[in-house]
Length: 248
Image (cartoon, rainbow, N blue to C red; front, side):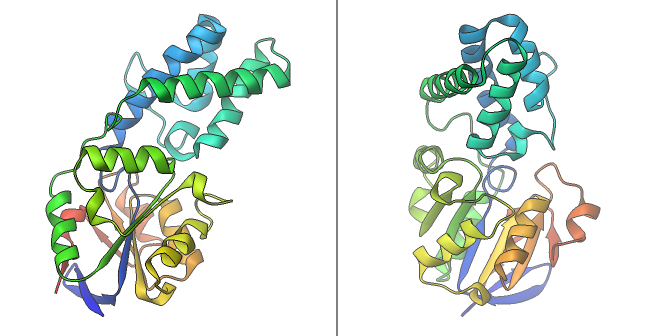
């Protein structure tokens, strides 16, 4: 197996599984872009009063460009955020059935209005690092809370899709993070085992997912919203960014 180097430690592995937002791409910018598209669509369907509640309940303040790092928009799979949005509609007079249907329509229209790469910008050094890992024979995979289609299309636009052997979105599995389902699906697609894999991510849920899947090592990066002290509670190694990783 190839050696992955992180903080001068060598981890023998066959596959490296990455989170996307906050790990490979700028999470704040992409979430603001997504929030604006969804806000505009929600306003169209339910009006200004409900939009204010929607922003509060999903964890965004677009006026001040603020995202709640622990809120539904930042952490929940789309299917869970839809339920949160529907709750906001229900609290403003919709029946539950109407609220669910309206939330689905609003979110579908918002997502269709966005163009690849959906506001995503690669963090510094990411592409070069992925290329170097690939050149040394490592298999690369993605386990993202985002849906599969958006992840794949954005990576094609950013010209890094060819580097990945597997892309797994939250809609590809029954349960999202911190369940190990996405890692198990990535391992299946790369014909690998848990003890041959390393998980790289910026959040507690990424580290828990790796632990729950029994991967060889969990590496935390500081390019997302989670501070070092929290990541160190679950990560085997914490580095400043993906750009610090190398293979030999």
